[in-house]
Image (cartoon, rainbow, N blue to C red; front, top):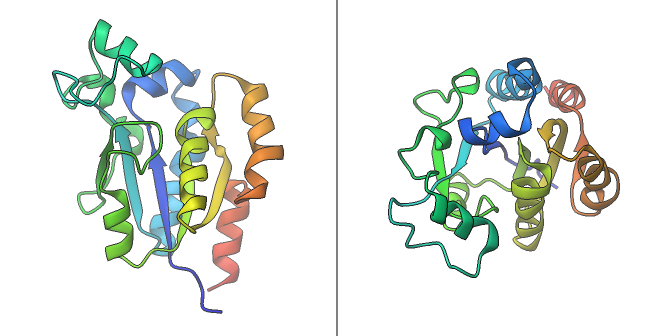
Length: 190
């Protein structure tokens, strides 16, 4: 069996989400380590962010979370809250995918990019574990992607939910490892 071609997906590390889920910028260290590991190993990096058009045409009143955002305003494509934080800034050649829902695939062109690059293995990092990570794992599994979830490069405001997902839910569909373990696995393939 041939080695899967991987990509690191760095998801929702944008100002409005980082601020609400991480205590300080030091908590970004595992994300920075994952990005640097990918770049050093020749693994492409794709950044994913959630944002809406200014008049929210993609938000249904039936969607509890996103309709609340559309009522109070913000989280539009140009809003500061949707911009990737500078501590993990993409390089000019690294794509930034804009999604309209929790999953990195929903309302985005991510699948087209992955198909064009012949990617079949996703390495997932992001905020929040119970949001973008969970939704992306489920959808990617249905799309037959091989996956690694970087447990320490994911965060959630509810630590118990994070731990339950990492220990009981994700291992059924993905390999769960730390950034250090992933880095070592890449080095062992060189």
